[in-house]
Image 1 (spheres, rainbow, N blue to C red):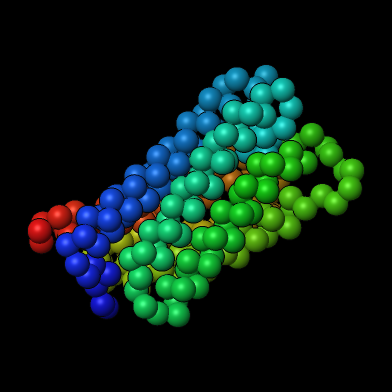
Image 2 (cartoon, rainbow, N blue to C red):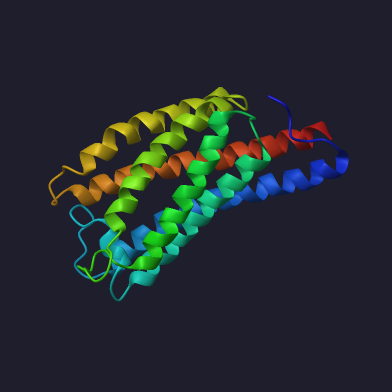
Length: 215
């Protein structure tokens, strides 16, 4: 894999971009986690086992979960920017970057539409289709990026493949679960994606630190 750093001036710029992207990826994931915890405590009569995250993103306290979703979308965008900058020069890596962009756009629309959790049926309700998009493209992301991540450290690839297996097996199950437990299962799937995003963010930071060590 060719290295993305070309000159002293480029090294400084690239290190800062990768460090920033990695930091935003991790911070955005934390925002999603904290937003879900706070929302679950604040929203009246919310049952985190039976009620899905969607139920937190509509109603009086929707801003809590919406901000958390926007933070996570920023994390996905940061991963896409970092991946485009630190490029593995393969079709698989390109597919991973495209997957990140599609996932980020989907999360933004989910947060903005507010058509879930409140029994909204006016107009075109696209939430269910966006959930399918998340299912497909997170699976693709985890598989496509693993090989390129291994070029930095094999442990990153192991994490990516593990996330692919957990998500690939768990996502179809979610759609057939009884509604009295699907909330907890959905949160488990969300944790899988956060683990990957944090891992990818740390990989970008690792690349930047290695560049620092060379200077």
